[in-house]
Length: 66
Length: 270
Image 1 (spheres, rainbow over the protein chains, first blue to last red):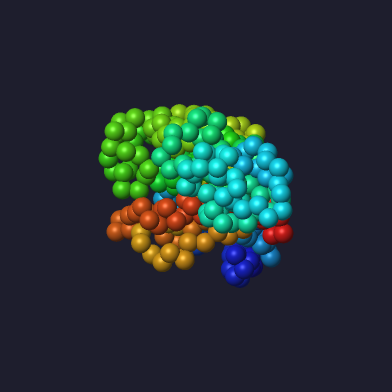
Image 2 (cartoon, rainbow over the protein chains, first blue to last red):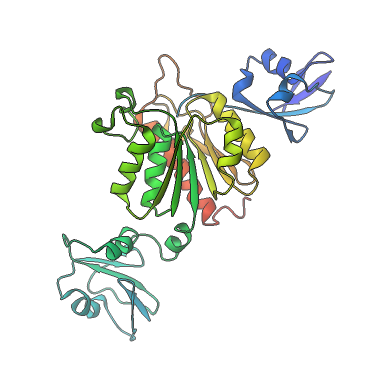
């Protein structure tokens, strides 16, 4: 199945959770804000929210420095 | 009617600035501003102009100082900004500079939060001085801000923020500037703002390390009232340190974006 991740199609396995998807993309979950199908996820939902076929993800990734 | 050094003066057609100088400053005023812009004695005045006449080197009273600080701003901007409260999370390279810029522009109240002390390794980019080493950043920045603009109300909280704190501490500010160093707190701050701070303008930052291109630092709208500053890729890392100029570009993007939002300049984009 496929999800749309920042506008790009991404192949994922059924049952993939947001945290799994971030790991596959090589992203550190703690530094990413996730909008899934128009809803901003809480930090707890990264590990529980299961992606559906056609889900639209917007990822805002932060790098360190301030 | 003219406004001359904040006092009302009747306007007559054909008046030039020289007509005011004798009355206001005993004839020796040599700093002349009309509507926030330098003028000359021959500048022709229009009804409603805001004029500032000052003698170079003269020590101002507290009240004169308050007005002179903003004499080079466009008329009307100040009245709006001095009503506003802005929160700043993290008082490092971004936060210390954004705070100073906002104080210079006359934001009425600043709420500053950091848990750390000033270290020698901070001085390459943060706005502290050698004598602040070992002091809490909250206290050191308060000291600097008072010296820049004593009319800004500064509240400090010496604390390591959590996502839950942010929702509570900043619910009454008009705008919140995220200046954390830690990317996990940057993400936490944005989540907190999006979930719990509706109506608070939010300006965060990501990607400002090193000495990459100036113009790669951008201000991008993420959501209504929520903006991200930076190149979004240049993280602080071995071989790519945080340096004064690029951090400064980003901090001033943040400060200017806050002012734009507070003054309604982004209404169309919003």
